[in-house]
Image 1 (cartoon, helix red, strand yellow):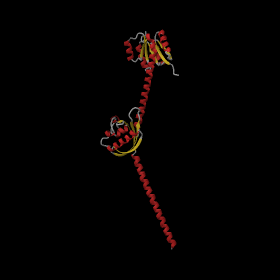
Image 2 (image 1 turned 180 degrees about the vertical axis):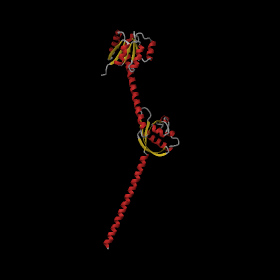
Image 3 (image 1 turned 90 degrees about the vertical axis):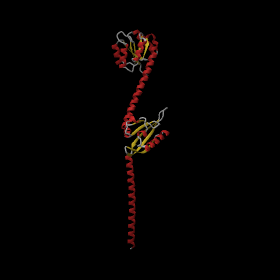
Image 4 (image 1 turned 90 degrees about the horizontal axis):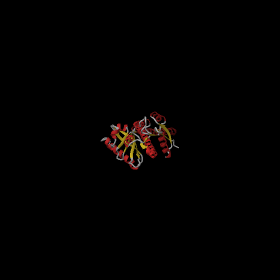
Length: 299
């Protein structure tokens, strides 16, 4: 069961307050009320009561409605603010909306209060969810950027035309560029005349992933910064319902590992040759000893 709505009423007439609260209860709006009739009580209620909604008269003997609106926007910016007044004209109502009021209702039409409250709460809920989604998106982007910045490899995202939508700083540095300057460019454009064969092979591998919609890994010889290197590329599709598929990829320089593997293979081959030669020598020595023993026995 949800908690009652906390409503702050700024109203100097008790009779108007009772009429207003009766309209809300008839609309089956569950709420806890806090009543303020002057500036001091109102400002204290903003800080202590912390209302979810504010219903305020515009014309008060000792306090201005717009001042109340400004205070609410400063102290409780997420709480909807609705003017309920009998003296607010059209020009004042428009100004109130421009200054941040959610809505206004004339006291002569209190039957419109409940719909205005429900509408304001719905809009406030949508704004809150949108802010939460934006905050979550910013947090996700920050984590993504931090991960990609310190990733010990190259990372990218491309569209189906092989144009980069994102490259991490390490890849941009390897290409002699800045990450933002790589956006919208293909690998051939970023590597003019330096990696024609390699970029063609990479494009072919990317097409394979985009066509099948399945991740794949490739070992790719490439020349980077004047050095012959071997990269392990892991490419994967990024599916987006209703939108074109994107391609993501991570590449790692495995040149040293491949050289170590080749050295290990050569060492193992040499060891096998030495072992075979040792076995041959043992066999030859065994045969020689056998011949000598045979000759001595024969004599």
